[in-house]
Image (cartoon, rainbow, N blue to C red; front, side):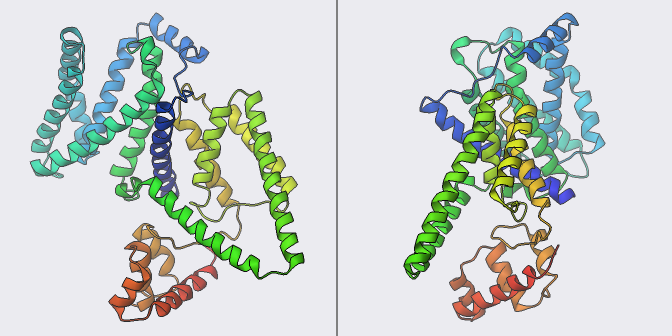
Length: 411
């Protein structure tokens, strides 16, 4: 279960970063559908409640302390009680910094002051910490990496969601909405980095690169399909063409109805985000789930997306929540597949690779070494052949032998 949660969170984070870049590009070319909703009734009631109870400043400062704790924990690679106590001890100094900068300075210099303050806090904690103490150079590199990633995410989020002409940067609702996705993302980073789940670096493998790899694979499959198609007789060709056209039309019709229902619920953009994150991650968690006929698929798909459209947060509040729903949909539907078999894929984590392959081969076997070089180290077949002094065809046979054994296993 822990690995499932890690994988869901890592896919959520990588999909969010990918889609955030995508809508940033769409915003630049003029497609502005991603601004925050300052007239959301729930947020207006929340603002009124905090205003009447004089809690707005307390909420702002509480969020600042949460961010500070998460950032310090990630930078110092520590989530122990010590850093929690240390964060609490910094409250008076953080209050002074926030109060001073808000009164004296009202421009981008405030961000620099906050970064310097966070860096100083990191150095102080690192010096007094005796267990996970780091060299200053390593701490600095880690600080730069974490801050750079956060700045990129905040910049993309602000540009895609913030309407600069309205100048409401100090208003309650925009601030809460702009920070919601960022806070969820930071919590995911914290969990993955410090709870020692999946390798954090794997999360930031370029999604576009993996998409291009899939497209290249699809083109190869298309060429193979066309070659096989040309060898068919006329009747078989006619049946294939007719089935392809009808299948395509049916799928277009299904998506059209799903979007029509989303339109009636006023959640078209949210539905597109759910659909996108579902399709991006459709096979990540295992074999995709299919019903026994197209009509059942049509009914279940529309009921499912109707429910998701009803429970999702509006895009004016969160981009990340519809993405999470789409990923959870792909996860739970994969669990409905009764013969859900494990599968080797390139770039997979070493622990998952070992969990699968060691059920069919020993660690000292040549099959293990070949598969490790191909699936983990992502070395090309011809280079593996050179390393182990085998032919390329022999490498392919060893891989096929392992995969055939795995297919016969049900996990």
